[in-house]
Length: 182
Length: 107
Ligand SMILES: [Zn+2]
Image (cartoon, rainbow over the protein chains, first blue to last red):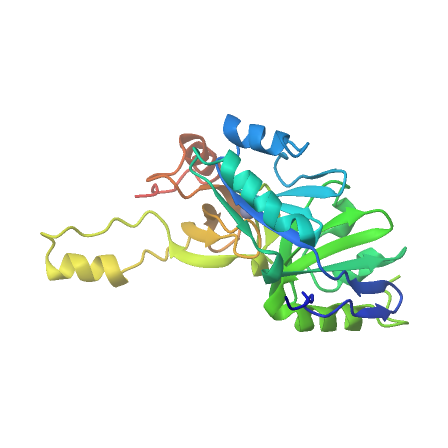
């Protein structure tokens, strides 16, 4: 079988913050009635619960983010995505729900450093200082849809794979040495 | 700058995170409608200098549609509510009446 390759193959940039395309990352999209007992039970099988509005929670190497009133995004190691998708789809068999492995349709970046916030302040119409830990914020970065949340040492961001190069360009340009806001 | 709070995800979104969807609460002219009625449904918009009800989609956010009531001159926002409804919520109508006693109503 051919090797799986992430969108930018782990591209990195060192500016006033450190930008990295994080390589292969599993992402499983879940569409369901978020209030249903069946969903809670299915997620419970992975040690997860249904996150509240705009919340992102984690358990071990899994993260689960609230994307919309009927959508969640589960992040996992890339090699577990297919199995987790199957497990959830099976558990939700009786529900009006959809589980989809979208790992190859997305790209994930890490933004690290004390001034990581400033990289996104210049790109997104979001008041970063009021973004709490544990919230996943969907918005736009320049012209394209992204979502990001706080992690230890900075922020993680996801975007569509088809615009990975564009987003990397934005992040690099924003993080250029000497281009900090304050 | 226009900022609207999405009733679905709770984010107070700046205008560029949203996509406008035109006048809200349009009623489709039925199969028995006259040409004039159908033309009006397709093309005639109130466009008042005053309170407007507009459809917006939180396109660069949760992706859901909602309706915003605001003033087309002052840009005062009276409120937002999910689009899955045929009329504005009663408490919002009260809010608008309190702010603009001469308001002629939404219909
Ligand atoms: Zn929203």
